Length: 197
Ligand SMILES: [Zn+2]
Image (cartoon, rainbow, N blue to C red; front, side):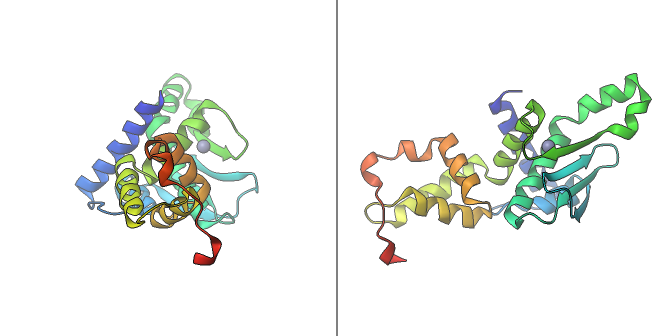
């Protein structure tokens, strides 16, 4: 799957949730509710191994989130596990058809240092789900307009991270991928003096 297709899949999930459960009009995206109320997945918050952010048992529809991680990280993990559910379930269905023994083994354990294709895809899905392109671009434009002259990237990243309830790192990466800052004229950016805070 390419990045655009994954982005599209995340959009579909948001539209489905908005149509069948509750319209999402402003961030932050209610990731727990999407998993619980729409996808009807069971969610457990547990103390998992330090290198593990979460896991999903695709047969039982059970997500586990590492409760020892920061809350914003847990939200990202929830989006990541839903990514596996939406993008990768069919891989396991196929295995189950061939060898019923796999029924007990349809669990994906998500470790932080795992750079496999499946883990990367779930990360892309989560970013697209909790920082939807349309919301990010409109909030970004609104915030930029609030500053009469120039504003630092760091400040805007912090404001958007707060609104979307994600880490600054996640928002910074997302804004970079969407090219938001690049579209601004270079002259719109500068570092605000720290004594303003
Ligand atoms: Zn994963």
